[in-house]
Image (cartoon, rainbow, N blue to C red; front, top):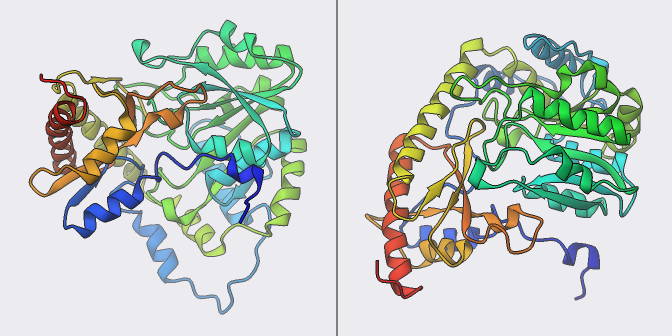
Length: 402
């Protein structure tokens, strides 16, 4: 049967579309090491799990469309720890950060309006934009300079009468770049000049390394009418399946408009809101311990991958991803090969081909995103599999004798 033209134009997620190959490998008894998805093996805070276990209401009722007040108050106190003065009225709870991005596109844009985004970018943004019929205009960053923000002039070249805003992710998924105070201010000045919005996905805010200081877009109070922050509990508290996110902005008109969409989906998940509020009461050293663990894992994985001939890694300053250049003809073809045709000591790897993280056709074809969210033993085995798999792939598929 004929599907809609709208959905037919959507790409399958490069993070998940190789799942059938992974499932087949696992059915053969091969251990698949998942580097393709940001699903940490870090334990969710005990406070959140205890809140779920002790949930004692007789009815799981509809909640408030903008999110329960106790959770918005908890988030406001959380932001205060970072020197950010945010009111509960500046926060809307969403069904994950994904819904927050979707709501922002549909609130700020009419069909065929445009948003500028640095590429590579979080690939699911393309689906959210397509649903809202928004065109993404890319500004390409490069592994040659560790995916630093392109010049403000490059952003300005892409602004036209259809441009409604610029979207960033900081710390960045997939590159690990952490945007500086100067970079953010430069973009905000550009947004003010052209009367557009700056939307920043900050879900990895705690995960900055090498002493790198995180700057929140919410700290720029002199631009507060055009600043929108996307947030989530998924990564910070290892609660990916809970689906609790937030839109944070001091622009009340934006939130009032987004509330119309929130009312249509009725309310965020009620039990998960209770868990999220409890997670905010986890000891301060929970997040710091997680940050330190990811920094260790980054160091282990980057060091090992850099020893593989022909492989070039960017050095992430935050989040828990990096982009790797592979000595292959096609990273997706290589990823399928690893799942379908290769194993070492009963193991293989699943990576996320990076071409789907670009708007510009053809870019990223020899790159992959690596998520270093697993323990060091798994990461080292994954790198060993990649090194050995590359040798076999280049010899048998590409016909190259190293």
